[in-house]
Amino acid sequence: MSLRVFADLHHADLYYSLQLLFEKRLGGELYRPIGLEWYEEKYWNVYPHPATAQQYLALDQAIVPPQDTHGNYLRDQDVLNANYIFEDGIYYINDSTKDKIQRGITLNKFKEMKFDILISSIPQHIEPFNKLISLYQPQAKHIFQVGNSWGHQPGIKNILASTSEFGVPGDINVCFYHQEFDLDVFKYVPPDPTNIKCIRSYIHLMQDKNVLDNYRRELSEYKFKTFGAGMEDNVTKSTKLAELISTSGWTWHVKPGGDGFGHVLFDTYACGRPTIVNSSYYRGKLGAQLFIDGVTCIDISKHSVQEASSLIRHYSQPDEHQKMCENSYKRFKEVANFDEEEEKIRTFLSVLH
Image (cartoon, rainbow, N blue to C red; front, side):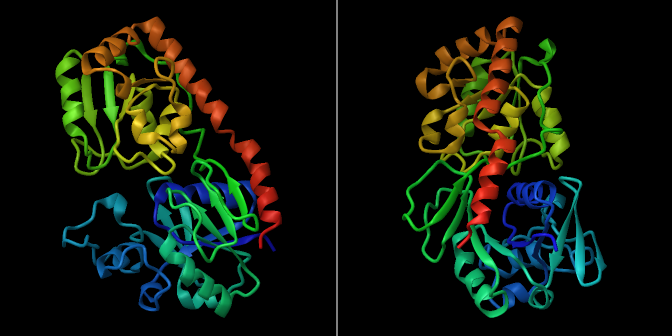
């Protein structure tokens, strides 16, 4: 029987990366929770609110559109279970953002099945998942996937971390890696000189919008556009995001607090586009690996608005921009090699506690 894995879902790109790892690379089967029993019996706690449980777990979303905690109807891409096929106790759920099918199971179905691995990806799921193993899956091993800067957590013996390295006790089995995404979608395309003066952002609910506005005024000849929740436009599908990145000259990613992993950053560099960033927000973060001021990015933490704008104009000359795009793609390949990391992960999985 192939490897059978059960994982929570709190972040769509993270879950997709686990699908690429455990299904595509390792030939296993990955399942996630569906059905409100997970919430009602306290095995699910992405956020302690009934509306959030409805968003992630409810089976009737095609009939009863889920709402957020303020009573607003969710965007289509945030409705997770509206389209599925039920067969032999398994919900085959269409993830329209990735054109991928997810396997969902109720708590009762989970109790009937046997799993090799359970993966929790937020600290509040560690104790419930340990309880699930104790009660129903004594043969299973528990992995804590660290995608944000939580570091080592109690109650865990195996850590799969897509963050900068952090210290762990000597008896902990740990593997540091990069979350995989589809390189047939996010791939290098040589820049089009007609798109160089296009700067796009994909930050949800941008905190430093005033900083972007300063650069909009200074670089008035450039076309800026923001995508994401609460911004000028939205993008739902990975293929569309890749197209937007590849048909722009720059990605604006000035984000206070940075990212645990940084999907937009890695997506951008896989497409071979430079970024405009504030590197101080990424001290100790994985995304900092990608930043080389004047080579793969313009780091506005090191320059005034006028100086950084002058640099953006300089590196927007077609020959200079071409070099920066090539350098950005080269840097991505230097820091994220999914094939090599597969071997590390296989070794990690072979010695699970």
